[in-house]
Image 1: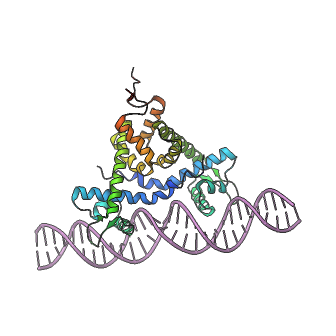
Image 2: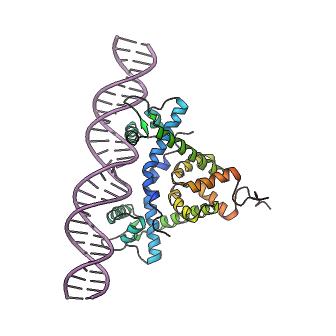
Image 3: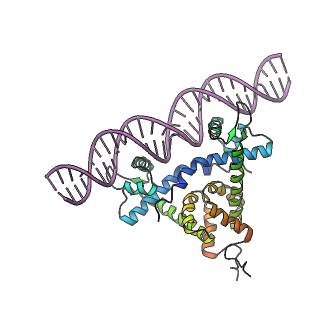
Length: 140
Length: 140
DNA sequence: CCAGAAACTTAGCCCGGGCTAACTATTGGC
DNA sequence: GCCAATAGTTAGCCCGGGCTAAGTTTCTGG
């Protein structure tokens, strides 16, 4: 085994939370019009203080904008990331369901897995969703 | 969507490193007879200091035993965790390959994904490896 | 219109998991 | 047998992502 298989897996996980947040923020905006910190508090089941910290980091990193006591908004970059993240999430989730996993488990597992799925694997999953399983008789 | 989908995904990641380590330690022991810190240093591409910290934590948590300047050994618990982890890893990796993903990508992705795959999903993957794809004509 | 509730902020803490730098032990080759 | 090289340790630092506690702002309904 090549010893450097890691590297990606490791440092990536810094941005996993960022992806989860922009996704949640986009969802909240889509569903309620705006996103307030309290939405994230309940969505992630963390405290207000934690949400504050995280949102500050996201702002520092150019993914969101927010002013004190104002709703949280996504920057263009944030929106792009959210859209991409949501798409990936959806594919993984649908794929798991297609695999025969319960919807509930698919929801939970896809949440964790989505951040570790490479483009190549994602494409393989997409292919399954669109064209069936690899060895299926799609030849005819 | 239920708002509590997270919970598991989140705090679990504390032990992801632990699993990676015991797996690596077991591998080193299997391959070289003993596991020295330096093996982990090169395997994870981190510094000696980091390995030391982590191993100390593992020891605190009852997964390994080690004395200064001595090789690292797995406790019974550590061995169990390593075995379980390795099995899971192997299933995910094989599954990805079966999906049509390149061996290299399968190796990388499985590394990250394995920690987020539930028992149910793992079983679904195993089923595929043993019995083919869900909708395949295994009925006839 | 104003009090209390709800939302938000801030400060200060903790742990995990990285790092560098400086030091100590062990080992092997000469 | 000694000395360099390799291995390991320790101290001190950083950031992410959690928390509590205490305070501030905003909103709302009576």
